[in-house]
Length: 134
Picture 1 (cartoon, rainbow, N blue to C red):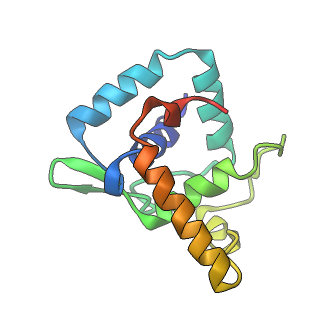
Picture 2: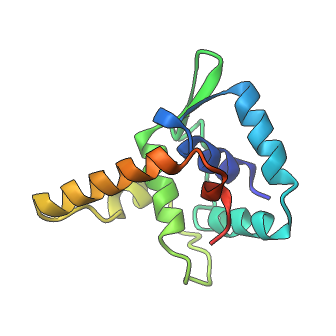
Picture 3: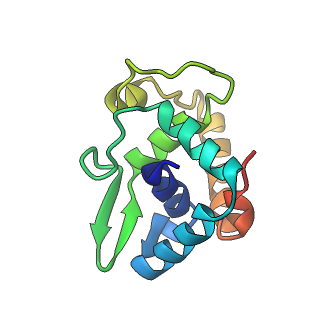
């Protein structure tokens, strides 16, 4: 199981991407015991960015008794999740390249639709359905 991917997945499910350590530990314990599917999924996602270091690369920041995912962390997580059909790891791809090559919205209508979609996802992410493997 990839601990760093798990942290990103948990934090993205909280309002503003912030969780206090007690909540983070509880969610990690639940996910760590949730079965082989979850472990395989986090390994698969982690293999897409093999040099992942959530603190060193500024994907997660430590603040006031908890951790918060940054916008850069959200971008990297979206990249990892956007390539489920790629069987081989992207070993040569660094986090910096991931951010540069991430798709950006086109016309303003697309940007608005994307923002609205993300906002609705954030409202429902607190439910455990956000942690189920696809």
